[in-house]
Image (cartoon, rainbow, N blue to C red; front, side, top):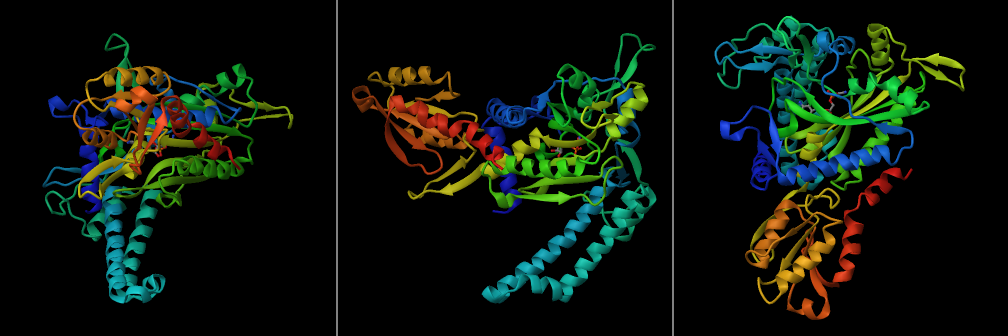
Length: 515
Ligand code: GAP
């Protein structure tokens, strides 16, 4: 199965089992907006809890806030979003379709990479065991020619983006003969900047209404509360403020399911440090955040850092943590050293002092900031894509199983009476009524036990408990483990301990806390 097919299956699985639905579906949907269903919302809550606890419980010097989505419009002027939060757009005059010029060029670069990888794959097949991939990449004339084209394109593209040179972006599209995927033609308009912020009006009368924006990131809500939190919480530098909340961007190229949405959720933490110490803290957070991801056990090889060569005007270091999605390695989280740009700019625009008096240095300064920023929805997608498995079983049947980390699974435990009579449902209910205070449980008595297992596998339930006639005599049940499908008989009184250990966030958090 190609990765594209796997991705399509994952999307339909998300819908079929109540994880993610297209928004407003009965009205034919709303592009790049999605709703989370009964299973999805549980998984999402668990992801958020894992992040929140890793920030708030593990760090005495990090506190949380929940700021409003609407903020004073000048905030977005100060942050640079009004003037510079733009995407370069180009239209194809024949198909009337609109594209991001930078994405068209990046896709062209990816085509060169694909071509190289195909050459490598072909050669690997031809030479078998004796194949030296590194040597082949360095010496094969066709690979070298394609790599040179890609590097030349990359250099022109990086320069045009850095210089904000829209005419050059268009020229690159023309020179590299990039065609519209719909019309197949090269009949392009000029490239224009398009601001990604959604705006609306606040106030009752048309005259008096004020233009306000739906926040495109949660970070600014933290910056403008920096002094409130520092003073009321008596926080001493270094300290952090964490927040989880919705953000909105009018994305033009909105595809790949929940990877790029117009309404999404971020988990952001701004860590305020002494000027001059920011790069040390940048390294520390880079490492801590990768540990957080890897602790989930989705596969260490699925992560990589991507250090930025083009830095935003406010940053002096930036990296992304990328995850291998079914459509390649993609950014899930950004870690940025944002200098004192944001606080400095808010000082200027608001006229209020946002300084910290450092008792050790006996001086005041505007703190520097390290930001960690992860999208909940992208995290959701990475967890789902790593967890989705189709397996052939020994009996010739197959199953779809979500091998979710137990702590994140929407349902922790399913309880089945073997049959719907002889007092087994009552016993099963009794067990569930005891466990429901600790875990999200599900009761199921319909169909054969095999079918019930399949249903739980498909939503990633790590444990199924079956109550049979012997249970009424020996107070034991059969526990069946999702990943191995092994079964064992355990005492009812041991169920809670067995499951608690596996589903708790504690073991995950301990892995991050270890140095
Ligand atoms: N405050 C910094 C900031 O917002 P960003 O790289 O633009 O930085 C941070 O966004 C994270 O938010 C990304 O790594 C991604 O996970 C998530 N994100 C950004 N745009 C998104 C979108 N349109 N849909 C889903 N997630 C998005």
